[in-house]
Length: 215
Image (cartoon, rainbow, N blue to C red; front, top):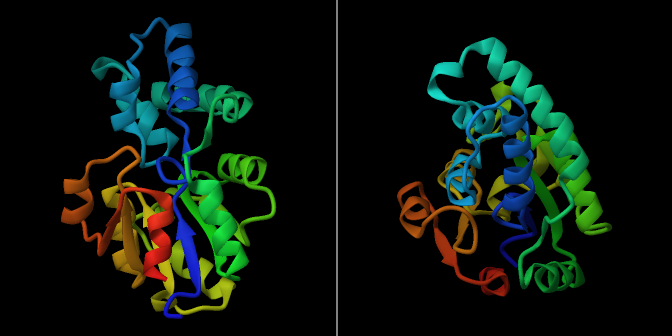
């Protein structure tokens, strides 16, 4: 077997978290008398961490550092309380994880979401599946920086070349490429096929169970 482990992105790959994220940021914006956004608009804000999302969601004339920081802190509080309300695994994900586990494939998660929130969602929705669940610990290590992915591969005990990296965004494909992992783009998430291919996807899948064909 060529691949011994699978490293998954979280949002847009394992779980659909759009509604909880959107409801939380819109609540925070509303409390500050700032305009709110549709789910479609917020969908485009997701992928580079919550601070980046907050920055994009704020009005152009309120993107000063103090406003970004205070809004970000409020978002963290609100989202922490609500991050598992309506967030759920995509269809086929549980079947995929069960099959991978039965084959003794090691599983891990790497997200640009804050580490605390990534762990809460990962371990709440998927107890007993993942060896490692890691989120963003510092802006310097944010994907597509490969350092966290390489750290995970080391902790799993496999070389990067033995790991499938599965994600829904160009940032994920860049991360896989930078870490020397095999890049798999998924089409049920937040980004289009063209972005995945442009940024280095080596395979594209339409349904979670299609991943098994790559093992």
